Length: 219
Image 1 (cartoon, helix red, strand yellow):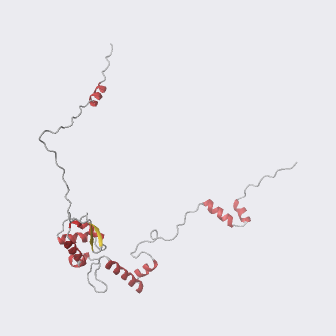
Image 2 (cartoon, rainbow, N blue to C red; image 1 turned 180 degrees about the horizontal axis):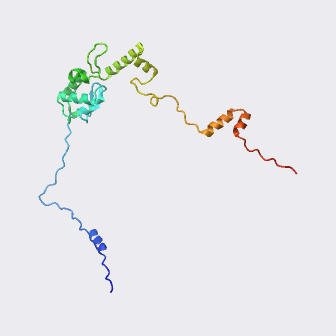
Image 3 (cartoon, rainbow, N blue to C red; image 1 turned 120 degrees about the vertical axis):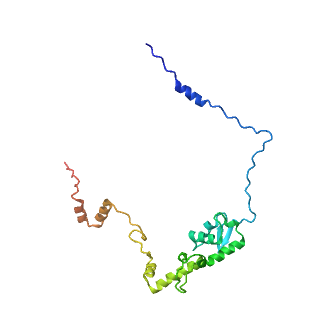
């Protein structure tokens, strides 16, 4: 009995897949209008750079994300400040008026009255004993004065500052290491250096009975 050969079905399927009907470009019907592209309206009073408390900030970003650039204001502090003033999260700094920016500056100066006590960065001030929240140059000046006072009375923190070591209990075995790095010397280089420094007799003994050159006999 002769067996019938199977038809190549796989090739036929591949040809059908390849021959796909081409899509015709859609023609515009008469009387139809093209969809108009939305034009972004640019506010004439929009400012790309805004100065707040002596710091130039980017006006293209929301207010609560730009204020932490000012030293002394963190993310949570800026959120508390903007919520207290009724400024939304989507409001950009460049859209604010000069009067609103002036109000933000006043609130930054009086942050200890706008936020709870536990959020202040200067609690129980050394001189006044009040809860304050300092920003900008005032914060840097107060930090400098605290360090000089600790150095003068030679407290533990002051001594650590004088020695240039970490103050807050960090380990110094692996971190805060200063000085030049010393590489690991190999055994061969170390032995060669020791042999060069040693006297000739000790060097010969250290050689461990090296083979002597064979004498050539003269006939």
